Length: 369
Image 1: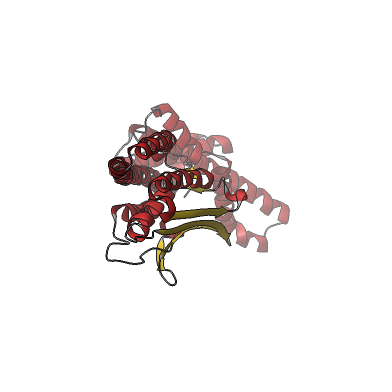
Image 2: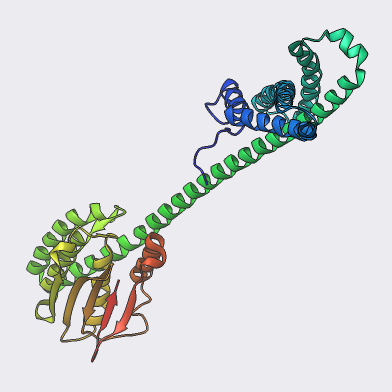
């Protein structure tokens, strides 16, 4: 659909009646419309004078044809001007369709009536004597051009109504898209607001447990956590992030957890440095890492390992978080963090993004985005 229309919708803010009238008038009275009227008059006269080719000289026939086109063109152009003025007035005043059509028929009749004396003047005939002597000429000319003018006005009026409907439809679609964007943004904000306390509360619970068992390590971990949150919290409220930033946040988070779990946690992060600026949703990787720790490694006395890989597969960015922990359980993929991560991916990318959980060998889980 075209973004710009010649006819503004009635009541559009900032558009004056004069602007609307001028735009509509130019749509009717232009070189294209004048050319159409000319060719119509030419065809009309050809139909009338074609038989003259059999018994008239060619120069005489051409003269009669030219004069006939000139005379009919006077009526045609007067009607076109009347239609243009009426259309402009109807659009500027936002007349109802029936009143506009009635006004168009009336102005067509007036223009058709005025065209008869105009044609007589151009041809050099006395108006009163000619009309008195040939009243049928007036009646036939008036009737023909009134009908043609009314039909022409109905055509232009229908075009205007169609363009106004298209304009209203385009405005409605724009408003609908704006509402959908606002709803999507509100949905993402709500989902992200659910992830943040979920992520923070679990992390603070780890700090609390460490304070109970090793206060010095607890203070050190709390200091590291404060530094981590100072960098992470601004990113939580952003609608986008980069792979490099998310990997560094995941590394900081794992480093904090390793302070508590010590030898029970090992991790590695592998990615192509060229992908550091790839756009990804914020706080997705820490959520996957937290889920792997909680459901995979924490239940095991010996702990385990987490490996993060990021690479390109064709035109798609693939990010994997693998653990060799306890594997699937009844709650592995049903947590708030993973559910909201899926919803965020769906809201941001639709079918172009997905998150899957697959069982590792011999145990563990791989979360892939």
